[in-house]
Length: 282
Image (cartoon, rainbow, N blue to C red; front, side):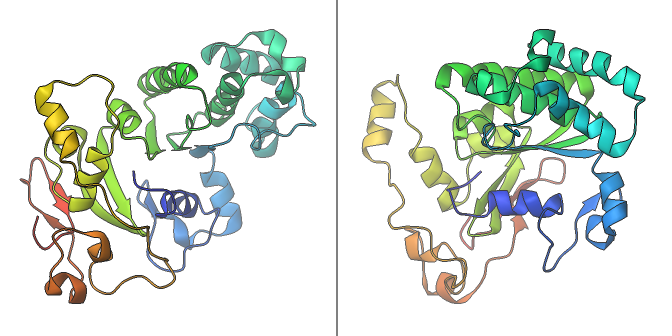
């Protein structure tokens, strides 16, 4: 999680090799993906899929839903052609759509239905890992809960691992087991869902928590909201990041040490329950 422009989508697309990494390593099932050739990576894509942020632009408007869902099987040649229709009908039913959808086009569906189709396409090859890049941010609030609950039920049924990207902390808290907070291309805090939301350690994470809108709150929470310190300024340019800790120009705790030294990502929790944070004063 993190503000818009902090690098969440770039990181996700680099993991899947949509973007070529300029440095570092990407390990999946004990293989370094950054070393694989194009043909080797194509085979690996059966295990790794993505649900994009905008269901409108991620579905081909000239193709029927049946053709869109058939594509993964045809590209990877994993099923006989005569088996494909039954499989895609089953996929549609899994995501709450009827088989009548097969002959329709993307524009004939609502935003929530289109995202269900994108989820069905991601599930087609039985992957182990799915990147969900803000899959509910373009949807109405009433539809978000349906899609989130669908993702949770599919995760449990198929034993999936998600990399779920969002700037909505309520969504992150609902769906995640472990949370990484990103600022200007770097992970600044990494902990279990329970630990991070109960005891945020980085000033940036605390500021994100303070910015959460609350509909119902008691007198104590009113005091907290009134005294919440929201982050001043904008995210700096990633092409010219600040020296030292990248967050120091906006941090209320910043000292000269923060301006000069890059804080290491260190564990302030236990071995059994680690809580990693990149801050000199956490």
